[in-house]
Image (cartoon, rainbow, N blue to C red; front, side, top):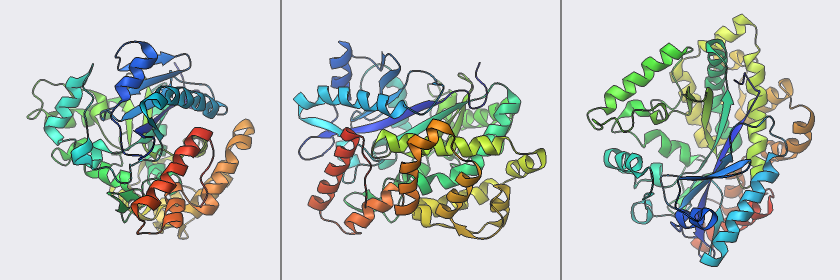
Length: 407
């Protein structure tokens, strides 16, 4: 069993699009079948695995179980991306990064995964109508961090709750929806926040409640299951993964899964953000008891307000909640979310190979802004379809080449 920060699991989701038009292409099953020779929900390829998602135009790449370190992982993801693109090229398709397709008509173009565990997806669709952007058009990067016991779970969950509101400042990558500026730099988090409104307890406030033991967490899950039961009497969704908060506990694999990160233009950027988040979380998990208690006492509604600001403004969001800043050890003076990340990364610095590999990407994010800010700076608020297509074609090139996008 792995303890705190003894392993990392990373999952990256990508859109499959037409190579010329960049319109979505629902052919993830064709890619998996071309690689494995049969239709599967998931295939293993050594240190990595590919799997389907709810939407048929999305494919997920992930580490095949936890890995001991993050440095070097981006290159492995790059090789998997190249392999997928080998299968897509004869079909006239390619992969597209970022967290939302900028002009997809989600009500018309969405196709649900029709194979394997489709009963799960069909149940989601029946209850929530998955044709909206909040189900049909969102790609995220998940970071899984292990814990060995209740004490480690409590410390890690408290640290993640505190840091979640700041994640869009680094990772926001979804500024355009339906062909126009969404009014928020992280539109994915906004549509994610409201996608389960028919059963609001499924998502809650996105920020998890302050629960710090297995038994308390199970009570939270039982409340969600109870609310779902009238819509799902067969219990198809009665599993801990139905909880859709920005971080969920997976006691089946003794890990906490952070779901609030937008996927970036290339795995190097995703892994740099994962390394920064892990480094700061490790420091927060090692706080003295009194400081750790201040983290545990942060109110969910206060954290949700900070998240609303960073969802809209990313690194430019003003953080002026004195109790929040003090709990993070950043003093009580107001500052932007980007400035706060600089403080946190100076205090909880990346070490060794992680520093050498990931600091250039982090410096780009902190100096030029998150990917969404760079995209908007390039395009403005009212780009034409051709301007959108040109920039997103460049982003697809970043994914293929493993390069960073600059404003």
